[in-house]
Length: 174
Image (spheres, rainbow, N blue to C red):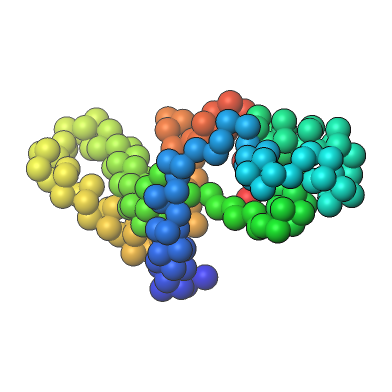
């Protein structure tokens, strides 16, 4: 995929996510949306069960699972449909995607330069701090321009850059 296309896709997704950023702080009702909407409509759990073609106990279980965050999207969709609603779903990053990519490029650049700096220091060819900063900025910019597939690879030597999930040993496949 060309870098131009990657940058376009990044910008488009960032723009779509912008609408969601304000909603991140909106906490659902403690009883969950299904129960809150059902009760606001004046609908009993047995009436919702009838509309969903499931048992009243299954509705109670669904409401409990939703309140605890352990329900499935398909179950939420079924309840939403029965409540004449829709499930609106998004993963909203804490920062704009473009900022995340720029930060990652800086992290990778620092990692690459740390290896080179170590080798240079062994040969008594240390760079002054101001030159090191310039080199870091240039390397990060070069990574942003090239946008290699390895940008998000875990750091080989330090374990930095690893997601909390992979640090626990879980698999994080694409």
